[in-house]
Length: 179
Image 1 (cartoon, rainbow, N blue to C red):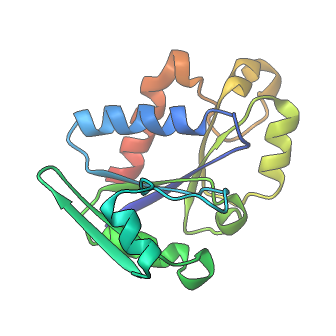
Image 2 (spheres, rainbow, N blue to C red; image 1 turned 60 degrees about the vertical axis):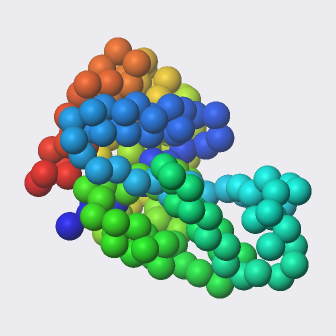
Image 3 (cartoon, rainbow, N blue to C red; image 1 turned 180 degrees about the vertical axis):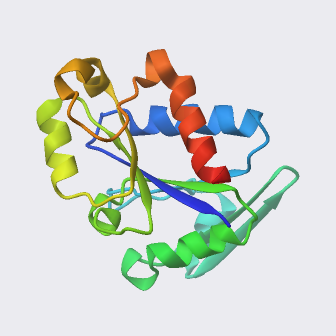
């Protein structure tokens, strides 16, 4: 069964670096990893202006598949209101992944008990704001806030400094995947 881990935190907190570290280490150990990233920009496209696939979309294609020797991409011209996060998760689950990391989506998953979370925060105030609206399970807290570990000693969630204890975060996620 594919495990889902949401990495949540404010912009610039280190979410992408945390996920990158986890992907790199888990992949090296043979785990199959996927990601889903939330993008806030309304005019975002992964396509390249002027390329054939971009032209197909401009002409009205609702789905465009690109097949190359080492990559297959599917661009779906849908707004977020037309497809749910769970629909996308289920599409990736079909790929036989061990774990899917979600980046962002805090407002959608914060209260969900079926999604495990890693909270990334810069400081104590930042952490408090995120934790206040976030339901368990929370696997770990990381980010620069981890340097305040002595002041956060009453916290029941593991506080892991990804830069000096990154192996502990990887092990924690491995245990979760295998558990």
